[in-house]
Length: 153
Image (cartoon, rainbow, N blue to C red; front, side):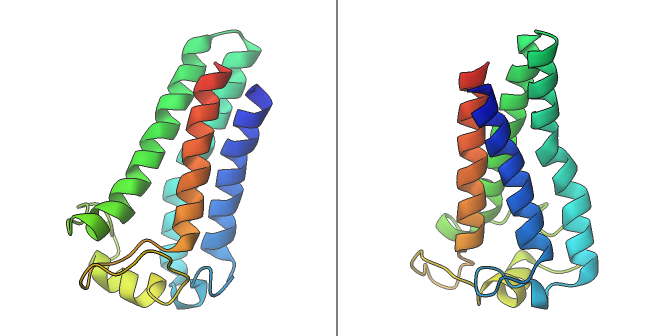
């Protein structure tokens, strides 16, 4: 189970980097993202997303389960952050205050320019931004990694 948890965590990080940096239209829309936005997203999120793998691996290597539990909690917080960022605006119409921190634009503007023309499989709710398939896959990977991490510990 440890190997599965590590594979899922690292797969989520690799997938995140791939869809943030490589144009895979219509899955993502990197071509309409600014280089500064991509850089900010990678620098802010990739280290945090990789930390559970370090904690879980270190906890297993030195036999300190608390590090594994910390990895699982962090992975759950990452999943929760993604769900709040994407699903709260869609389902409730409320945008997380940190959704576009440092970009100088609103979530609706960023979504309209960057995500609205990608693959989206959920139905419209008014004019609310909808989660795209790219992020639904990422959220599934992160949540599966959290579950596997707790199971491994």
